[in-house]
Image (cartoon, rainbow, N blue to C red; front, side, top):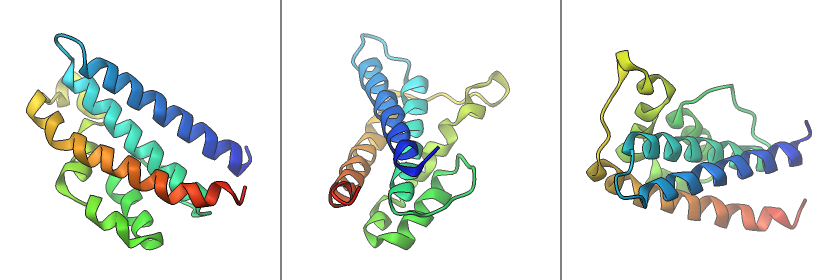
Length: 135
């Protein structure tokens, strides 16, 4: 798959994850573990899209910390998102959804990570805007 298509696929899948997370957050009794998982998926995919847009290779991974470290090498503004709330989203990974590793995520945790997820989204979109004209 060529890089523009790969980039578009990561962006589309990330936006879909975010939409479903926000939709689930709005129901009467949200499944916060699912919301956290989808926020985590969104962040991972948006970081990967940013790296692809900047012609940066990365290993196959689900580590938010690793992806953020690569983004930091491109742009120091990512440093403000290299915080506990964002890095901790890795705990909402697939493994944490299985009974033997299950963790409980509550509304308070989601309210803590949401501003960082939103801020990271805005940052990446602002950094990608100038690159779109070059494609």
